Image (cartoon, rainbow, N blue to C red; front, side, top):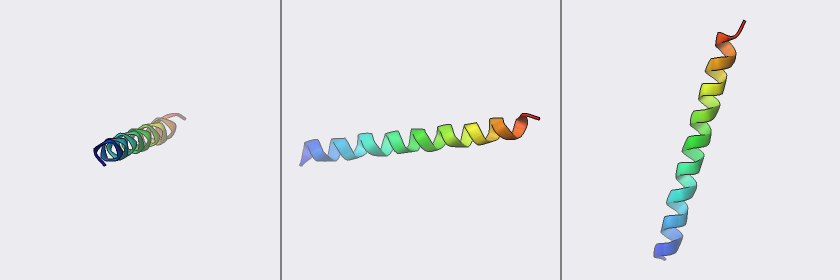
Length: 33
């Protein structure tokens, strides 16, 4: 159970990081002419 919980937390962090990267990518794309 504890191991599974840790896995979920890691997955959530990965998703958050992915979303952050996507948001930054969109911002950079908008800045480019």
